[in-house]
Image (cartoon, rainbow, N blue to C red; front, top):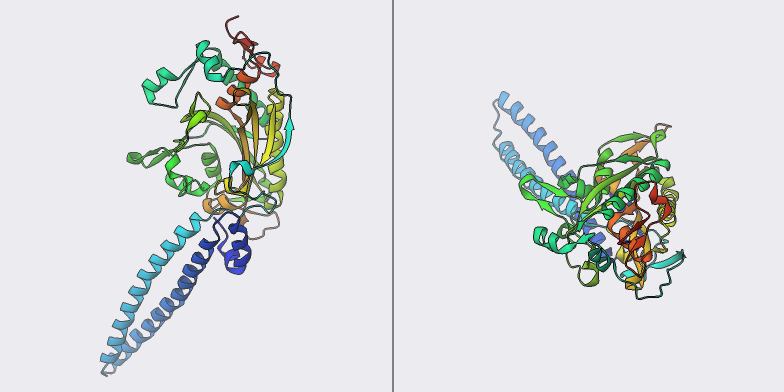
Length: 423
C-alpha cells in the first residue's frame, strides 16, 4: 500500500512513477475521493458540535419554561444531516480503500521500462552452456523413459498440470531442499515450515489480492486460500507488530508446497513439470530498515547466484521490466537457467524488493533505537530453489546420449545419487 501522505504532498511525483506502470490515472481518482473524505469529516464534526450545543440550549429553555420548538426542529435537521454524512463517509472510505489497495508499488527509478517479459535487461550470463553431440531431449521425455515422471497417472488423479515424481527424483528433491536450507541458514535465514492455507487478509497484506485472485486456489467453505508462495506466510509473521530497530534485519527461509492456478498459461510451458499447479520451493524473506533494502536486494540475488553456481547450472541474471513486475515489487531480478530443449533461458528464481508496500498493508513497523516514531519496515523476498524447475535444468544440462544424467558433486552428500538412469 502506498503512503497516502506522500500521494497528497507530492502527487505529481507519484503519478510520474505510476505512469511507468500504466496506473497514473488511478492517482487522480484517489485524490478526488480523498478530498471528498477530508471535506466530509469537518462537516460531520461541525454538525455534531452544533447539535450538542443546541441540545444543551433546549434543556436550558425547558427549565425556564420557554418555547424550544425551533431549536428542536434544528436538532432534528442536524441529526438527518449527520446520518446522511456518515453514510456518505462510509461509502467514500470504502471507495478510497478499494483504490488504495489496487495501486501497485512505485517502481524503482533504476528498474527498466517496458511492459513485456522481453523488455527485461540482461545483466550478466554465467556458466558454460553444454555442447551435445546429439539432439538434446526435454525433461519429460527423459523422465518418462526412466519411469521418474508420470503425468498421465497424475492427470487421471488430479487433472492436467500435475505430476508424480518417483524414485531417484524424490531423493534429488530432498537433496535440493536440504542443500538450499544449509546455504541460506548459513547466510542468517531462519528455516521455517509455514502454513500453506491462509486467510484473505494475508493475501491482501502481501499484495496478491485483489489483482491476482484468478491465480489463487480458494476454499470458500473455510474462508481460506492455498498460497502460491511461502512469501505470504513469512510476511505475516510480524503483521501488526512494532519491531525494535536493533532486532533488524530479520531473515527467514520457508519451505513449502505452493499452489497456482496458472490461468491463461499455454504452449510448451504446460509440458512436463515446468509450469504446474503444485510445486515445492524454498523461499527467502527479509525484514530490514528502509536504508538497507537496496543492499539486501543485492544480497538475496547473490545467494541465488551462489546456489545456481554450486549446482553447476548455466544461468543469466535479468533486471525485470516494470510492466512485468507484480503489484508489490519496486524492482525484481530473475535468474534464468539455460534449458537446452528450448534453446533459451527460463526463469528459475526471482528476488524482489517490495520496499514498504507490504509492510504498510500488514501493519509491520519498527522503532529505531533512538526511540523515534514507528515507521514501516521494508520487506524483500527471493527464491532459494524452485524444485521442479531446478530439476529440469539439472536433467537437461547434464543429460547423456543414452538418456541418463549426472548430478553435481555438491548434492551427493545430501543423499542424491551421482547418476540417475538405466546404467
